Length: 133
Length: 133
DNA sequence: CAGCATCCAGCTTGATACTG
DNA sequence: CAGTATCAAGCTGGATGCTG
Image (cartoon, rainbow over all chains, first blue to last red):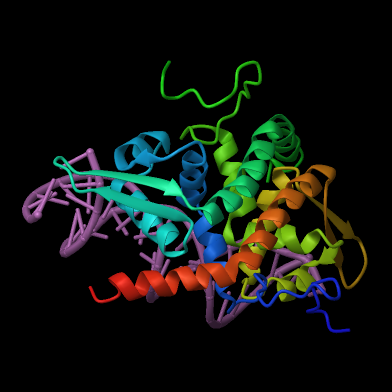
C-alpha cells in the first residue's frame, strides 16, 4: 500500500537501489560509472593487461583505471592475475559474476549506440524550440 | 588488423562509446549516471510528477533532479507534459525510446541487486586478504 | 610494465533563497 | 507545486614524479 513497494509479490529482493542507504547503489555506480562501464565492456571480449585496457578505454587516466579496477575487483566482478615475471605482467579478466553483469551492461550500451541517430535528432528538436532562451 | 576494431563484420555501428569523442558516451552517462539511472528506473513504472520523482529517487536534490530531467528530455528519452493549471502540474514519462533504454537498464539494475549477496561476500574476502595494508 | 603518492584546479553537488 | 539562481565546499580526476 505504501509508495515504497517496488517488487512483484513473492519475488522481493532484500536490496533496493532506489534507497539511499542500500549498498547496491554503490555497486551500480561502480558498474555504470564512466570508467567502470567501459572497463567491463572492454574485458568482456577477453582478458587484458593494464596498458592494453588503458588504450582501449580511450581517455582514461592511469589513476582512474587503477581505481576503477580496484573497485571492480573488490566487488568480485574482475579478477586480477599478476605473473611474477620481469617485467611484471598483470592480466585482468571478468569473473563469472562480472560476465553476467557485463552482458546486461553491453546490451544497454549497444542499444544506446544504436539509438544515437534518434537521440541526436531529439537534441536538435529540443535545441531548436527552446534554444533561444 | 588495428586494435580499434570492435564490431563484427557487416554490422558496423557508426557510434562507438569506447571512443572519447563519440556523442554516445555522453548519452550513456546521462542514462547510467547516479540520478539518470534512478530516474529512468522510476519512470518505467509510469508517469510521475516532479515531487513524486523526488521522493522515489531517495537522496536526489531538487537541482540535480531538474538537471537530470532536462538532459533526458533533450536526449529524447523523457517526455515533459506541463498542464497549465494552478497550482502547476507537470508529468514526466518515458518516450518509446526511453522505454527501450530503461528496459535494458532495469535488467542491469535488477541483476546487480540480485547479485549483492555475492558482491558483499567478495568484498569481505578482499578486505580480509588485503585489509591490513 | 604496472602501478602508488601527492598536489591542486575545476567541476559537481548540496543548501539556501527566491519566482511564477 | 514546480521549478530557477546563486554560492560555498568537497570530491573527482588529471598531471607529475617515483617505486618495484
